[in-house]
Picture (tube, rainbow, N blue to C red):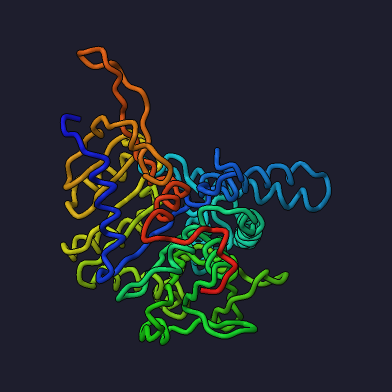
Length: 415
């Protein structure tokens, strides 16, 4: 990498984008964000909720453990595990060497949607539907976790959102199924709209989403892949209920739905909100915890950036550039997509490492860290720059330093 980038300057550009009150601002919070919940001492991630790869491993492990039982439950689990293994093999390709649970659900539901099919590759449609139900049950169990009581990244994010004063409402997009953003917003008294209205069983209201007449101070929360509190009724309508009752169908990951089905459900409307965001003038979106592994979401993001050159995207990566080749390929094609990885960046399509920086810059909340490098020609120590903003924990510490955010301990007070 011959090109080099100034990490302090790039972090400063993120800061300026956050401060621009008249630009539309969005956050895209990927599956890596829950890993940004640290322990009380803020020394390491507690891995509160697994990412998609972690979910996939946990589901397969659960099926494997259950299949070793000698009762009727064990026989069913063995049958489901066999289907899981076959689906995993069917999903493997040059582009997808390690399929995750979303790939597997796509394959499963595509088979179940085939008219007239009763058995495919030794898998019965009945078994596949049971596997779908079991998979969603395990996902709900794994991601249905409350935030820690102590100050954490989601709380800091919510407090930052609460004190924003902007011309346009903040929009939060996420493919995550968990309820961490909702919990943080509610604990910190952040009003938000997520497409549902009501109290006892809030129902999805497409018209309210499309007309968007909510007050500007209300944040918008758009869950692109469903949620553990979305329930489908027999007439295909969707409402919110948490926790789901036995037998209720949780709406997680919509890949199998046809256009007509999606139109009646929240999924397509949520994706439409992301498309609409990019049609505005000078929008800026911050991506965190997203690895660019989802082709459908990549298409939505990249089409939006291609179609509006005034749009600006900062993709903040936890990993190093060498471990983020899919993201790098995307950023090398679009000048309005800036990729800030841990050890380097892709800015205006140019890939490069970070310049050495003064170790004094590496303070809490700066988004910058350093590690000792090789001595220079004069024998003096050098310090390689590291960008920490791709870690949701450090991004929220960074937000906490912006715009005079109040201390987290005051989160129980009314604004």
